[in-house]
Amino acid sequence: MILLLKVASGLHELHKKGIIHRDVKPENLLYESTCPASRIKITDFGLSYKEGTDDTMKSRLLGSIDYIAPEVLTRRWYTKVKTTERKRERLSAARASPWTWFG
Image (cartoon, rainbow, N blue to C red):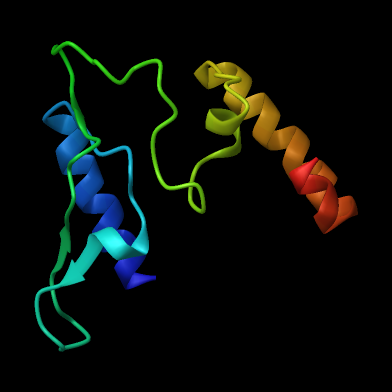
C-alpha cells in the first residue's frame, strides 16, 4: 500500500506540472535503495506528454499492452461523468460475477 501511495503522489506532482507519463508500469518504477522504506523513482518518460505542447502521438495507441487500460484499447474515451457511471456499472457487475468485469 505504501508503494501505491508513493507512486500516486509522484504522478500527482507530475500532473500538477502538466506532465502525463502514459506508460506507468512496474518496470518503470525504481527503488532508490534496497531498503523497504526506499524512495521510488518514476522512470522512462519516452511516451510522456507535456500539456500545452504539440502531441505528435495523440492518435496512436500508446503504452505497454499488458498494462494498457481497456478504454484505450477500444478507443472508447469517457468524460468524467461517464467514467463514474461506467465504474458503478462494472462494480455492480463484478459483485455478481468477477468475469463480467472484462465484458
